[in-house]
Image (tube, rainbow, N blue to C red; front, side):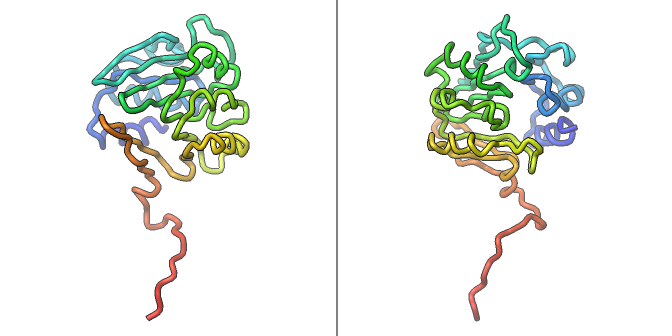
Length: 225
């Protein structure tokens, strides 16, 4: 249960005792798992999801939902209210924008939904940071989508030695051809960027920042005496 084992302690560490809006992209367990225990453990004002019937008091996410807070704009880009398709392709897609950059959270959409987004939004998809669709699956991250988003930073949320071998090698190469800086949770652990009013911070990778004494280190050759 990552909700109470990982997310809740992290929020407590940051002094966060209340969630205004919890967004669950879709119903796959690696996205929805832990959401219910988390919402039981911490106050949540509203939950948005493409599968709202799976969560208590949740509402559907849909294209056109828009809200602002403290100079930050949150825009739901997908799905449209009457969209049909696979559960992956109906994932909530959220763009978070500030004065200095934006983040695109793409859920598990695949090339079909990517094309719908390109058709609807075109150059408006451009974002500073992209969480890669479907963990870097070979069925996602089409060249057209990568070219539309033009992300400087790309994050692959994947498990260590996952059985699907995400991210796919050819997808990694596509982003490298776009000159994006790539980050992978399997290698880096949790990855944190801070968007201030003036700049985007260098990433904090928690595998390095909160390193344990048993974490593998490259060998070091000491100078001879």
